[in-house]
Length: 461
Image 1 (spheres, rainbow, N blue to C red):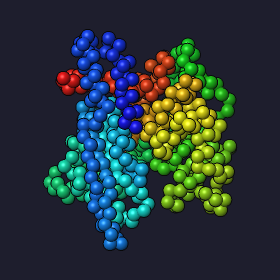
Image 2: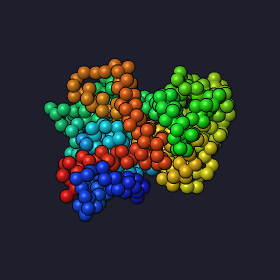
Image 3: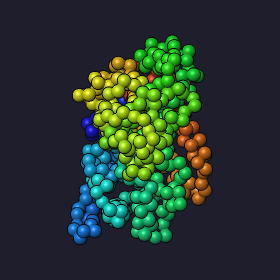
Image 4: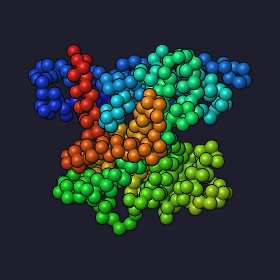
């Protein structure tokens, strides 16, 4: 994963090195040296913190749980990134995700740097009391490096507002009398969280897709018609289709379920969700699934989708039960990836039939698969662009805590979508106007901003 991030950064810098309009004050050997510095700075983290949390379990035994906090870059502001609770968490993964957070915040003009945390555990294997202690221990072990103006964690896979409430409370206990509201985001509303935070990522994921296929296309139809880009042709083909776009959603957690519901309720774009999946199953219905009923069922069954005919009857949902991996290979127009990383890779890339892929998860398509799909004209809306809703609303939460005033849910969503619209309007013309995939356009834009800031701060010498 680390090598993938280095490749992303280096490819972007190589493209910018030849652009004499970028950092024109750097010429000749000085320019090459500066770009070498940029490559080193942006492809490695500033700090890697690792510890083993000592936790006493309710059965009387003591365990040591590996935990990480990576601080990648803070040129644009305090480090910012979620804490992942998952048994697969490892050092390389957390470093890669922290790097992507730096790039994501730069892309969307959010004044944060990039960070990421992780705890190596399956949260389902621990009691509530044990998880509470694990959260307290995480803050105790890393309290020196965290804070509203240093490093601001948020929820990630396996964690949510409950864990952020616990962590903020422990931070407050450790640092009495100091500002604490902004030490963690993604908290419950009663503890200073923002309305709309839980739904923010999923709403943003669907919005990027809808904006590209509807709003931008309506405004730029002539521009797209005159473009020789395979991606423009692909977008126009769907616009001219008489039938609704078919959508499959991998992952039915906070991101996937909200994105599916947004699609189900959308009044702007004709689409239908024909398949959803989770860790156990894929559910398929060619006529479209009843997403609200599935969300209601999961809320009553530990987040799991129905896996039997009896459970489908309980949910009052009509669907065919398939293997969980089948969702990736269905003959659909659009595939939303809202589960884990590395879902589409070198060995299964040829089996993908969707012509539009939206990355709700972090890094679900490998670089090799992305290149292969892009060469076929498949539009991949990358994680850096699509799933930034969470960090954008985290910023709004952070600001509300500092100002001690709070936005309505309607205001939060308006500000969120306005921010994402501005990013899309910046990126999409370049994407449809040249042969580079959307991911590369996003990375170049992010690296350009970070490079300019680092250069002006004198950090390349």
